[in-house]
Amino acid sequence: MDATLLVMAAGAGSRFGGLKQMEPIGKNGEVLLDYSVFDAKNAGFSKVVFVIKKSMEEDFKAIIGKRCEKYIDVEYAFQEGDDLPGGFTLPKGRTKPWGTVQAVLSAKDKINTPFAVINSDDYYGKSVYKYITEHFEKSKEMCMVAYDLEKTLSDNGTVTRGVCDIKDGYLAKITEHYNLDKSTNLTMDTKVSMNIWGFYPDIFDKLEAGFVNFLKNLKDEMKDEYILPVFVDEIIKSENAKIKVLSTKDSWIGMTYREDLPFVKEAMQKLDYKF
Image 1 (tube, rainbow, N blue to C red):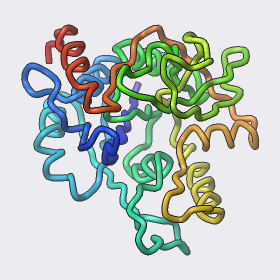
Image 2: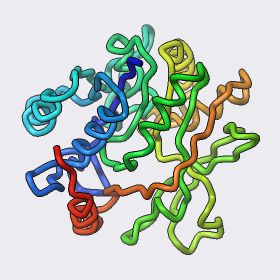
Image 3: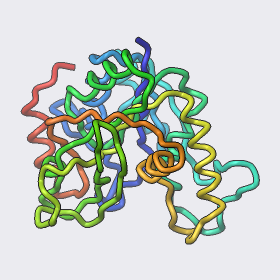
Image 4: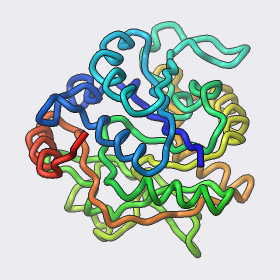
């Protein structure tokens, strides 16, 4: 089946101290994103849409895009602060991104198939993309992949995770938990979201409506962001939306902090990918 991978790659990496999505990891200069796109292609995805900022376009295409173009169709969408629905303008002085909902919306015109959403600076494991394509083949429901909390923590600082309340295999609630580390009171097998979602194109209308409502109700026009876990929780509550939870035992590998880099390089090179 046709499926698209949407990669949110416009983030600035403030805690990492640079553009994580372009940090060399592999033996031949591969970045984390190379592994994700390669795995998605092998699982049946036929196209990738990279959501980036205009300011990084040249470097991103040279470092990442040209490699991916060798084996999968590649398109680009651009997430910019002033790309807002009619009637809204960018508050003077705001530089912070609007969040992951806007990132997904920026690719609306590029996607007409079922699609998965991922972060650019996370390695999700090989199996999760196959879980999603198999789900798309048999269901019209949205889905997400959930990880054990233990497998998503950093040794170098705290992290934010969407903690999942799951009932009968479906997401009942998702709540952002901040400053999580191994001393948390949550059990290590608590299921959490790592921002890997499976959607159909009809989600864009819901995302647009949610984004407009968010902009109408800004509390801090300099800092507020509208993120996918909040949006998903809203449509579960307001529409009884069904989001199938696909659990994995794969370990997440990601770069939240600069200090994570040596571990990530070692872990990825041990996997010995053959690009």
